[in-house]
Length: 523
Image 1 (tube, rainbow, N blue to C red):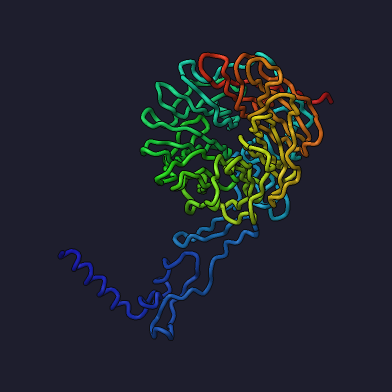
Image 2 (tube, rainbow, N blue to C red):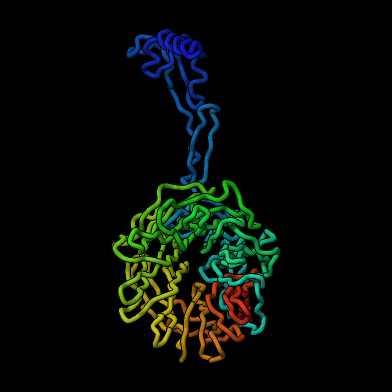
């Protein structure tokens, strides 16, 4: 108590000694040298002030840190007097080219960056185009003119034979500078517990180490979603370590190891939080998931995080709650986020699309339904077409009479540009479609049982960017008894379109990988 009382008396005496200057936030002085440390970013003099009737430190000039560059934030450190000029855009991939400001074309005036893809150092203006799954020269087209040729029989099992069941979740390319170029994730059941597994791969898609559990041995989980920033991975998943499925997030370095701050719990709710979808916008992460409501239906919610994994703002509710909304798939456009999901209805399921700002606000006036009333939409996915500044969604109609795989093109104003188009035109049943937007064309891979060989096989099919023209006919990718379903695609370093999928040829459902070789046109 004595110490506290002495401090209080001393503090009061100091204020009295300084007179009105303390109350007016002016520093009393007797000479100019008394003002030297007030603020090093200004020139100070000690002069009489009529408001306080005493001498005080007055700033007569301020340091200008303006470097004349509209793409920097200019500031002066008052403790040191040093200027800092911080770029408003990032060069996350380290290729010497910065990504543009949101809403700007790379290289346009005011864009503050000319990199068309700041997640990959192989993409920048003036680079030579090669077969590597990258828009090397930033013309908006990936591997210009390339075709994709399956090699039957080249597939191999990625998940361990000891798993009781496995299903792919994410397939994302990372850094060509690391021993881990691609990160695959899948759900697996081992000893009765469902867990999310990570499998680091090299640039050709081959495992570099054994798969490892994302959550630890005691925490069941599932539904991972991975995004690459240019120097690290973000990963989100549903985890029931808290007794209830909640959404978690973590950062992974280029080798797949967790970075600080470690696992971060995003949701705290009574209901299940499931099926996260995560993207990198160029400035931060956007995360969307389905959140259980009190009546058992679901709504969609979202959260932003920065490059360091710190939460930005609060959880946002994205759907009204009047409908049962599930299975979100998120894609980052140039100025906005595109979101597609499954909306449960009394007798069917609709596929619904809407756009949001990068801050998860400013939604398009209302969502647009992509399916017709007679369809029963399932398995929706979404990609952004950079070349044409629009979105392409794929899904399948699960109607029992005949399953059909569809693709559709939507503008960033949430208006349908190309209505649902039958992608495979198969005489049989189709399901589970994945796609890659290449700028001037779209590569689809989907499950099809047209061969009637005791299950679904995967087929590849290339269409023009507006889905109107067949550029490569449906080509069989797998050949094995049992179903080959649930494909997910990414690129190898040589441009091979790698396909992660679930396969039932063995005693238990397992995760397999295969590829479609990239062939550039002859000069």
